[in-house]
Amino acid sequence: MKFFVDTADTAEIADLAATGLLDGVTTNPSLIAKSGRKFLDVIAEICALVDGPVSAEVTALDTPTMLKEAAVLRKIAPNVTIKAPLTWDGLKACKALSSEGVSVNVTLCFSANQALLAAKAGAAFISPFIGRLDDIGEDGMQLIRDIRTLYDNYPALKTEILAASIRSPEHVKQAALIGADVVTVPPSVLRDLAKHALTDKGLDAFMADWAKSGQTIL
Ligand code: G3P
Image (cartoon, rainbow, N blue to C red; front, side, top):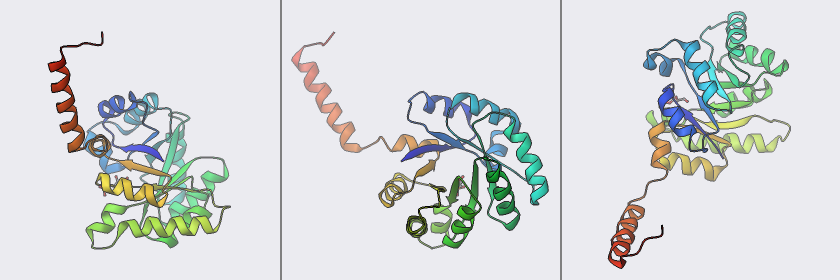
C-alpha cells in the first residue's frame, strides 16, 4: 500500500519525506487556503520535496477552463497529478488529459458508479471520501470494498483506489485489509500509525532494566 499525505503544509511534508515512507502528496483547495500561501508556489515546493505524485486540483467547473488550468499546473513539475472533481465536466477533462498520458486523480467520489465512470475516463486514481460518508451515517469503508470488487471484476481498468478523507489509524487498517492501493492521510494520522501504548510501556521497561545492567553498546 502506498502512503500519501493529505496536506499543503510543506514543513510537515519535508519532515515526513525524510522518513522515506512517503509515496506522494494530495492537496485540495481547502488545504491550500488553510496554508495561506500561493497555490502554484506551494505545489512547486511540494514537488521538489517528494518524488511521487503530487495532486494539484483544478478549480474551474467547466471542462475547457479545467484543461487550461491543468496546462498551467502540469508545467510546475513532472510529478504533478491533476486532480479533478467527479462531475461530467471533470470526467470529460479526465478523459482528455488521460488520453494525452496525463495522470489524473478524480476526487469527491461517493459511489461505486462514480468510481466506474472515473476508471472508464482513464483516471490514474479515484478518491473515495471515507470520513465524509461516515459523517452522514453511512459506512465509508463499504464504498472502498465495493470499488475494489468492481475494479477487480474488470482487470483492464487500471485506476488505483486512493482512500481519502481518512480520519484514523483504524481507517488505514481497514482500507489496507480491503486492498485499497493508496491511502492519503493527514500528517497526524500518519504519525499515529507508529504509536501503541504497549510499545511505549515495553520500551520504558527495557530502558530501565538496561540502565540497571550498567552496560553500553558504544
Ligand atoms: O483527500 C480528501 C480529504 O482532504 C478530505 O478529508 O477530512 O476534509 O473529509 P476531510
